[in-house]
Length: 497
Ligand code: NAD
Image 1 (cartoon, rainbow, N blue to C red):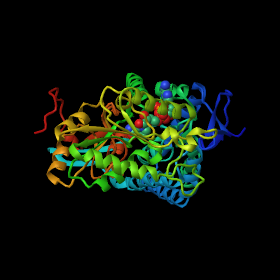
Image 2 (cartoon, protein in one colour):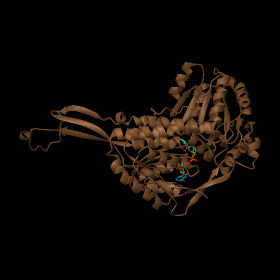
Image 3 (spheres, rainbow, N blue to C red):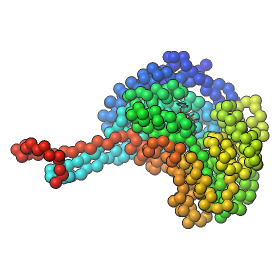
Image 4 (tube, rainbow, N blue to C red):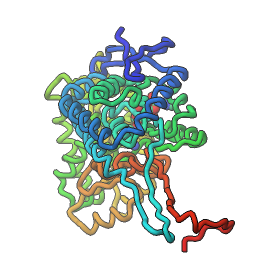
């Protein structure tokens, strides 16, 4: 069986401990390879290599760092299709969707190519007589990224581009479910001229994550994954004195006001709910239909769902692939049975799809539920699959209360033709990222990505300007060049006048 290895100090390194896990092709259910699972000792080896490299990398010039990132961007852009196929083979999303995530990841590399201007500090002349102050941003040293299965290229790129550009060394712990993309990124960074040890990959599971979170030489942790793990990584990492940003799960609501165009809203709801089989942290999982738009909207969504093509990524016509594992597929399907038992109406049942009958692959068709309300597990839990719930409400105020009462606050959207209502929603809603007639409002790379409430632990959003802040610390230098003849002893606290 082929082994997917670690990447440490510029070399592929196999499992020393013999701990491994299977990696599946979700479209066939077959095992493609086994991935090495690092022990704490193996993680320590990667951190040591990173610490050694970080000391040299932080001394490299800004133009040198920018040159490496430009070269990396060029390589990545020229291999988008190949990476998309690899993602599709291990994750299951169709290649066109996978190419989209690589494109959004590339935006982050583009942003980090501008590092010389992003790292400009401040200077104040004559803060006191003959005294100047300037501030510089310096890297943290070794920083680690722990990433989820659902974006094996984009989420690592959210982190690594800025981390490396800022002069840190980076240790990536990708998801053990689709670990190969991380190694392709490693190859390309190396080919782009990044010195060995500045970027490392440790494959693994909880044991590797705990080892990174506990290692004294890891200065900061960027985590993206489910809320329970995000919360525990944040708590443990900060207790260990580290800077931690931990992005968690989501339950994204799309509010549709009565004046919204039914076709526009239905197109958006279907695209945002079922793209990547709903395995996106910014997927729409709840449509909040306000007033009498509910019936026509549900009809229009169901009509579109009937035309969705579910299939493997190797089928060029397929729009939605399988789920990540058989276990996850079964868990998602179990919410449909529970919702039905609790009184929801299953308008479209994904369990009936021919590919969901097996015997191969982890497929489940798209499902639509009506009459859902808080208190039902299908509403309360993050399902992370192709299940769209409709909650009917009578007013805008009820719709906003639903969004605001939800423990998650990643993304939300409003569909309306009324600019005043949209502006009010933008002001009222307790959520980190908001779309107006945009169902998946993932910010461009020169803004930053961050949910609120249980969707993000810590106060640092990811990538963009917030990423540069997260991966640097500010040093403030106060300078004077006095005439030595004017010097005297003065025990008073220094004053600025
Ligand atoms: P996950 O939490 O199971 O795993 C995320 C990472 O943590 C993986 O690298 C995994 O190996 C590791 N991990 C898993 N269990 C662990 C444990 N008990 N202790 C320590 N480490 C552990 O998440 P996933 O299933 O890979 O990804 C899906 C989740 O990620 C969803 O909840 C989704 O909403 C969320 N997500 C959030 C964002 C965001 O930006 N907020 C983006 C993408 C995905």
